[in-house]
Image (cartoon, rainbow, N blue to C red; front, side, top):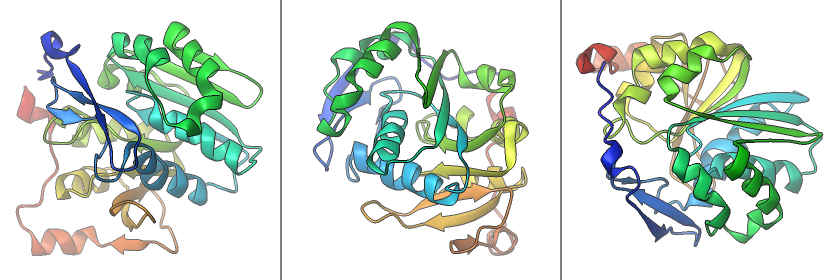
Length: 258
């Protein structure tokens, strides 16, 4: 299966300022920014991933989170920020695949928003050792291709931040087969958060037993929530009706890249 990745371009990145003032990078390899410049890097992490995920899993005292992919670490750091800000006692284990080793190694010098100032020692530890652990948090950055890393994960996942580059730019992290691998390691009440509202994304999730919902963040555009179980209080997307109305609706398949 061809990856479509171009390692010769991997190191070519450009710092850009997003709408909320937080910094992100633009990847030449994927021809895309790591975050929505309109929603803002910090706000996107909080509004599309951390806040909805924790609000739906607030009854758990331990959470295992799969952060796809680590990148600049915003989702992971925003999780720590949210937990500390709300004085939660939740024990959090974050597992995050990332194939760009040099990017992770460079993060100790990246200009993060002030909200992450207290996490500088954690960022430094992650950039040097790809792991961090204290009494409340355990973070593991697994260097390698997510498609190869995920099937090897033995922990059961409560939350998935599905935050890879877009289906158009990085389709292998949005295929039906990829979501199958995700489902295998998810608990039956797991929550998947993703910025993607594309029909192909939703079909790939639905075909693997996930129900689909729309989430409206306070300071970000709408996004998608998926779970093997029905969720009260969210706008439900009837995928069978979607299929009836759109005969061309289909998921992305690995076969397209063989």
